[in-house]
Image (cartoon, rainbow, N blue to C red):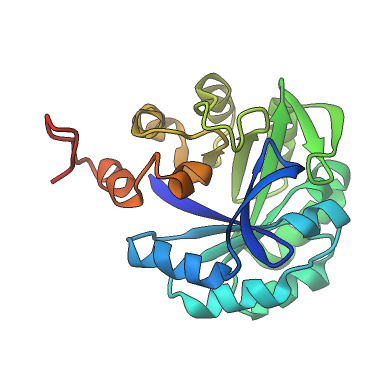
Length: 251
């Protein structure tokens, strides 16, 4: 299972929001590329970068910062937030982004998803962000009546490479991942599911590892890494099958 550190960008800084609320965030660094280098140095094999301002305003905002992140590390970087056109996606791919994560466009414009998947093959992922089983869009500002499972089925049929599933109510809270909904989603589709939102301790990762055979192939971790509740090296060791010693540490 991939252990994927998250780097969320707002006003040029690396931040973490509480349940996606723009007015409830913590700044961790004003040099996000150095944060990316740190996670790579600690063993991360992939990074998840979100342009929060792009998601809120509906267009890419942090292209300069994202390009610097991509050129500062040697591991794949997946990027989401504000992707509303094939041209914007092409710009990101040309700067070295490995995969792009669509959100609002995937829910509202099925034709765009089909076009993106056709143009960029296996490089297109979709983030399904939900609260109480209903999908949110526009940087989580708007709730819809669309349910998670039917949307995932449609996206699978349109050629999406993977689904990033986030429980908004848990994101940034360190309350624990929504295991029940994550399992239900993974059992409902054949494409990979990447879990996100609320991961707070190694036990969350252990629980998700039990779903790997169902198709949960990765977990995105944000606040817990920045607060120190989870140490990346220990999470990576756990994903590779290492077990903590009686003292709680890893060999």
